[in-house]
Length: 516
Image (cartoon, rainbow, N blue to C red; front, side, top):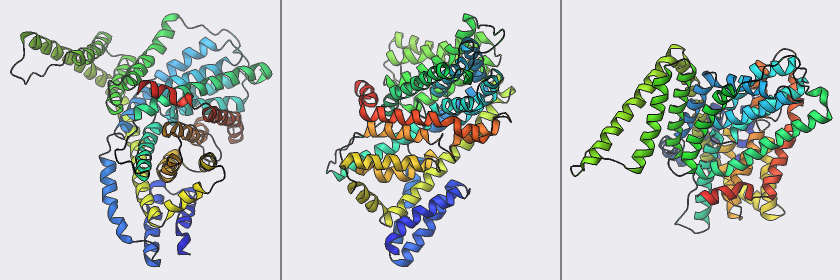
């Protein structure tokens, strides 16, 4: 029996998580129990648990993962500020007269929110509260409307910036370094979050196009499922369109542009995004426009000019021009601080910052607790011989690397029906990724394939998170059966997206190779 403790441990984990007990406690508890069972049966050296402190310290000092709470608070502030509602209203009026127009607007808004917030739950809830009732009033089939809302909300996991890509980049980089050690290479290379953000850009846009094509075709084939909005629907003015679309687009360009352009690290870009979101929220909440806009311009100017001509005022050999530039930089910084204080005043009064901070703390705690518990689990699982068993299973698959990857993708897809993407990413992937890379698979391409697969886990019944988010806010006439049936065609589109990335690897590898 002791020879199969690793398999029993994995089975016990699945049973504990599906029982409804909190995931992080289930993962850590199962690990500790099986560590002592392994010690009692002689299958594991209990001294391995001494490495737990190093794992905790490694997690708390991981520079890559610091970006997660910053991106979360950026999305939370944008979600609480009402920018999503303005986008949905404007796009709905813009496309509502077309057959399937409301569905098109939901997908486009989902893509914009994905690139500016990256939070699936917030996006699905916002669109479920605002867009889904409008779709039902227009005569949309409940299954079709629910499927579109659920799927558009999941774009936040594949369109950068997203927490999934940050976690995946860390896991893939560690796996890539481990694979290089196994191959005898000690001058190892690392992978960056920026590379994965760049790699996910084209596949993310490809999925958006697949969704839009499906909606248009379905509107033509089954017109009763997605009729145009009846009655007078006032078209938005050009100013309304610009005021709804331009702010989030500018924020996206500031965050992703600084990462892909090599100007800032993901953590620094996440800080830029959080500040930008706060300024947008202050502007949306009725703050003094002149102060906020001038402060935002001042901060942009400060970033650009200080990068071109940096000044260190503590030096004693500065020229008169350097002192003049330093004084200008100080004035720009003061204007930026004034804009931030004005935005904080507005958002504090409206309690936006309270709610955004609370949701950020909850989500960050959940993610980091799961990663920490998974570190303990993988330590015990490796001690019981599970890592060697996984490697042997993959190497014994018919078809070599292709067969091993096909098995992994199928296994991840099935696990996605029951487990959260964080749990799969930090428990399973560290065990399989090094072996797959040693077998010759490109780590960037492999990471994006897995990312699309993990995104699908938000849609797969019975435990897809998007399904539960929508179930909680959907109108009474939309049943759970409607939601499950509505996402099925989009799960097929996700699989089609994975097939396209599989057979055309350049979709994922061309952009990061060009930029990095």
